[in-house]
Image (tube, rainbow, N blue to C red; front, top):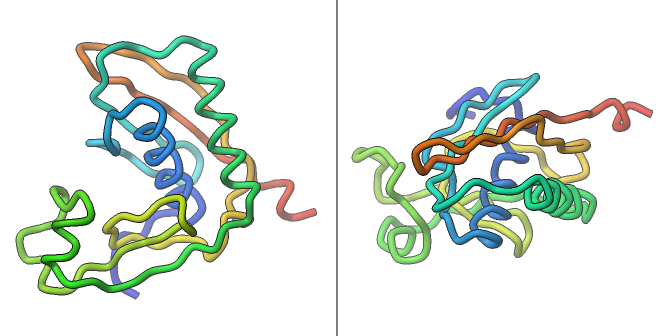
Length: 151
């Protein structure tokens, strides 16, 4: 499989975080992210920083979605349909006429070339390690605890 060589669980958690942030704060998906195995970060354009209570609510909501054991799938759609239904602004100009859409049940769907888990039950526990707001950008840093998956 071609595509970015991200950690599958962390990358899938990023999708869920993006969807939660957009649903809760109408800020769109992250415009910048850095995904690693041990820790990751996402940047959002938003009008104000989030309170500790709001950050806790984001973390709790992401974990609630993960615990639903939702299947993660993919579908191929034509470029025109992708442009109409999804944010395709991050796609390269040479993405072609077929676009890969990653789905997390009915919860989230977006174009992506990365690798993902097959079910949210493979992600583990999501935790936000810090969040800061500067010049209209909210940066959320997060990690996963997958030790419970081995038990």
